[in-house]
Image (cartoon, rainbow, N blue to C red; front, side, top):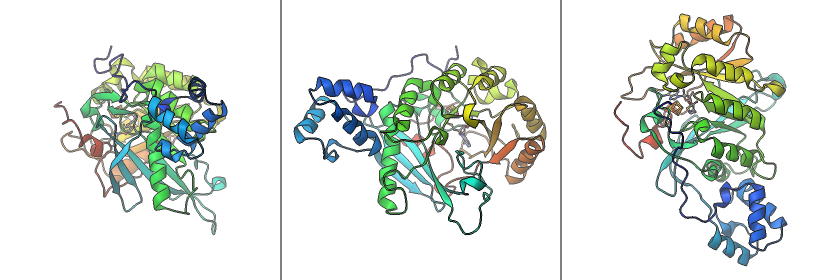
Amino acid sequence: MLPVVSPNPPQSPAPDERPDLRTLSLSALQALVALLGEKPFRAKQLFRWLHHKGAASFDEMTDLARPFREQLARETQLTRLTADAVQVSTDGTRKYRFRTWDNRFIESVYMPDEVGEPAFDPDADDEDPVEEPLARSSGKPARVRRTLCVSTQVGCAMGCRFCMTGTMGLVRNLTAGEIVDQVYRVNADLRGINKGEMDAQRPLTNLVYMGMGEPLHNYANVKRSLDLLLHQDGANFSHRHVTVSTSGLVPNILRLGEETQVKLAVSLNATTDEQRAKLMPVDKKWNIAALLEACRQFPMKNGRRITFEYVMLRGVNDTDEDAERLSTLLAGMPVKVNLIPYNENPGLGFGDPGVERVQAFRRHLERRGFAAMVRKNRGRDIAAACGQLAVAGQERPRAR
Ligand code: SAH
Ligand code: SF4
């Protein structure tokens, strides 16, 4: 057993014992509504307020009778996040720090991105902003992809050496309600700032589970959040527009493949176990061979491709030999490689290899026939690295 991964991570507390409406499935809401003596159709109505409109309070649910709303306020609770800080970048990126009810901080990052028209842009559904302008026919307006990167845990147990969130250890899991509420709070904020320019009800088009935490280490709550966000009476995201990223928890990769249709991203980050185990302790439990075997078993129907993320660390995993080994490892799999130039974290001792090295690495992969992209460095002017805003709000990083 990997020491950093507790088999029973701290469960998501709630302010009290009353059911948190935002975490309940539609069928659980139906049971609750029946218990409260209301007509069955009220459950769907309530579900739409919670997940389609993203209501922040019972007061907003104006077509529910006041006595029913008062009863809900007495007998249930509605966990919501409070935006504690928002940083806005010149490239449109908005970094939100949210405070939870127990005064923890998490971070969600909004990234708007122009993409070509679908007919000219086979990767238009893809989750990542990439460097190159995508092909677009003249004259027609660009489609804008509005992606939110959501957090799934406060901190993270996986302890990857280069990652700021990893320095915190796991504080607690987020509830499904706290995961989906990031989406609803950001939608509400975007509706406020961009009146008329976006889909009025649901500005966000894409979601990536790539914020703080390891989504597959909080599997049950992440799965529930996906069900809520993909529900047609809820936020109604398309599974093609939702990506879950993992550092490689093999059994739960297989479960995710069986139980959902969302896309998978795998943070590979190295090409030998010796190298990977030093960067990512999870490799000692599930090595590269086991991880790739799980990826091969991941259902690829509907043209689903796995994205392999590869954080490029200067002098650690950035040589042409690494690129060659990576091509050998991934040969024959329907994959995309996403190269992420390292966002430097003071004190962690890793560096960005620089544009030329990253591009040479990418060209090497392309010569071997891989679709390789370099992730755009978003919001450079507002904060250096993923996780920093939230980590700064709570525990001091553990000494390594
Ligand atoms: N825990 C999940 C998802 C969150 S991390 C996972 O590891 O996949 C999301 C991505 O950010 C991962 O690919 C991770 O390798 C990368 N990452 C972490 N710290 C980074 C940094 N400082 N610079 C660039 N990428 C980083
Ligand atoms: Fe956790 Fe992902 Fe950071 Fe690793 S890279 S410590 S898995 S958040």
